[in-house]
Image 1 (cartoon, helix red, strand yellow):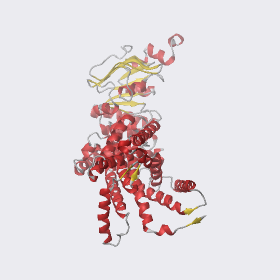
Image 2 (cartoon, helix red, strand yellow):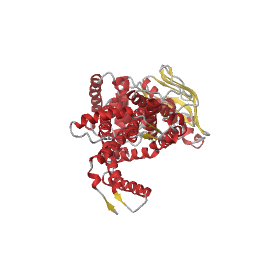
Image 3 (spheres, chains in turn orange, yellow):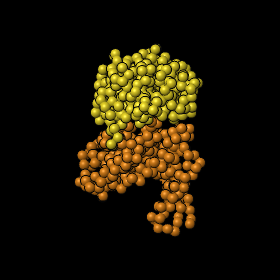
Image 4 (cartoon, chains in turn purple, yellow):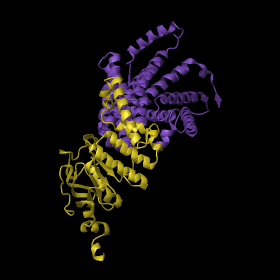
Amino acid sequence: MTIDLTALAAPDFWIGVGIVAGIYSIFSLGLQLNVGLTGILNFGQAGFMAVGAYAMAILILRFHWPAPVALAASAAIAMLAGVVIGAASLRLSGDYLAMATIAAAQLVSGVAQNAAPLTGGNQGLLGYDAAWTTLARWMLARLSAVGLGDQSQLPLFIVTWAIFGLALALLTGLRGTPWGRVLRAIREDEAAAAALGKNVFAYKLQSLAIAAGLAALAGDLLALNITLIYPQSFSADVTFIGFAVLVLGGLGSFAGVALGSVLLWSVLEAASFVRLPLAADKVAAVQMLIVGLVLIAVMVWRPEGLRGKREEMVLRG
Amino acid sequence: MASRPGAPGPAPILEVRDLRRAFGGVRAVDRASLAVEQGSITALIGPNGAGKTTLFNLVTGFLRPDAGDVVFAGRPVTGRPAHVIARLGMMRTFQLTKALGAMTVLDNMLLAAQDQPAEHLAGLLAGPASWRRREAANRTRALGILERFRLAAQARAYAGTLSGGQRKLLELARLLMAAPRLVLLDEPLAGVNPVLGREILAHMHALRRERGMTFLFIEHDMEAVMNNADVVIVMAQGRVIARGRPRDVRRDAAVIDAYLGAHAEDTA
């Protein structure tokens, strides 16, 4: 076994990691709103991500919508999907809701695989990023003025983290309002919230719709990053990585999501530099093993996660 | 008078007629009828399994009745969702206290305020200045109420750090913040030491006197029931079997039967 660390010193490696970490941060902000703030076990977040990415790609490729409009519309469509799926499932509790959301994500994946005229089936879609390429080139020209012109991935990095920053500011602001207080009460005890006159179902629906919108934006950015989307791009693994990010960052903390995501993806990507005399699929398994060890280490060292509140974790029982 | 089940008194704030709810083959509430007079302190008693808590759940919208009617303040509310009934002014507590542990005592209180439009996303659009003003006013009112319930010192503490008795007080304080017209208390004295129990009862009388609140409470402590209730309603096997003044109910043959088993008077 050898370790080649030269690539770790290369800026483009870290920019690449940063983009993926940023995409998962946006994705997990939505999960945090659901799981950490409202108490909804949303296991279908990858489904909303797929809805967003496919909506954007289809609107651009099949309906020739301008890219910025398609981007905004993709978030709106995913939010609508959140309302529809939520209306059907949010009256279920705990585990049943989790199963229903997994099923909803499977449904999205099934449609993506089979509605080939629209989605390209298992071949997927590509060529939706022409407008983005133009914008990225324009940004790179500006960046070259400060000597960063040769970092071709930098524009997406900047856009991703700018969107994360906006979403973080919005959610942090919302949490501090009376609206956010009702969500926390629902997380604590639905019956108590209802007994005080709060429409629990309506709040859960709003929480899920906002999370779906964030998943869609993450999906749009992922689509721009990988330039080809196909059903497996949004597999259930994506949701589970999102949950790992939540646990690492700390349940209930929006800023923790970014820390958790950066840590997880740094470890995951850096682990690929560990050269093992093994087949590629086994190397991938070893990568996940290392991530698992990091997760365990964090749980031992800080059970509440990097930015979670231990008091709240204990008091919630 | 004591043996007339569910006889309506003057100006009932709550009327329940022929309410029914079965769980599988168990008829938990079986054609129960009762009325609670405006401004009264009414006790709901009965042996374990009589259907008292199920009746509370049906009346407050936490369970849907199979049949029957619930009328609150002249308005039919049968089968309406719990939050709608609460907003109309009928609120309840639970047998196990539901203080929201990972929220502060003050947040528990602010949550109960019924006049904060910024609890809705649309209400937030009016801008932070307007809801912060309302919030500040509510905070002042909340601190005043906490003072009264001797919880002001814990206002910033997590509710989960309070003792069991303090949590019961917080639940009452929270109700006062919400200012309902009718309060349904499910065993307010269970697991509470006698001193605190007297305090809770005193709060109940004071709130009735000052605010005209009506109370319906489930309780097993017979001394507390006999000394504090104006009217006692007795349930057994899902039905209301007696209603009357405490001293009349105590002598009612059907009530004695329900508590001690049939034909108790033969052996007595």
